[in-house]
Length: 124
Ligand SMILES: [Ca+2]
Ligand SMILES: [Ca+2]
Image (cartoon, rainbow, N blue to C red; front, side, top):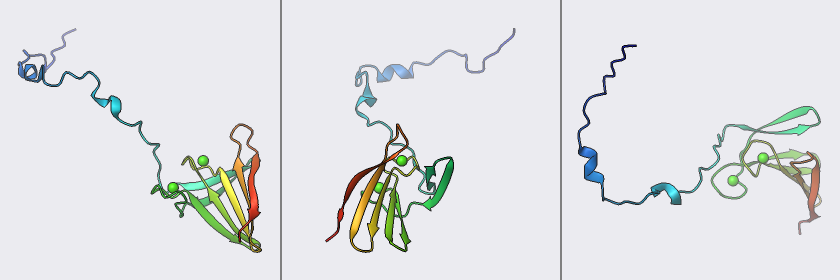
C-alpha cells in the first residue's frame, strides 16, 4: 500500500503553549446532561389497544418550561386535557374536566399500558 497522508508532516509545537494553562482534567464534568430533543411540531399521540390516535400538535405549556406539552379537546361533556409530561410525544396523562365542575385525572402506567386514575374531584 502506498498511502501518502497529506497531513502527515512534522507537527509544529503550538500546542505546547497550552500546557500548564488550566490543567483541569474534566472541564465538562459540570455540564448538565443533554435535554431530550423535542420537536414542538411533533404531534401528540396515544394508543388504544392496537390503534394509535394522532391528537395533533401540543398547544399548551402546562408546566411553564417553555415546551408545549398538552392539548385540550372540548367535547359535549366538558374539556379533556391530554398531556405528554416526558416529551416523547406519547400522551401519558389525561385530565377530564366535566361541565358540572367535576374532574378526573388519569396517568398512563408505562409498564402495563393501563390508565390509572390518579385524582378525582370537583373544581369549586
Ligand atoms: Ca411544558
Ligand atoms: Ca409521554
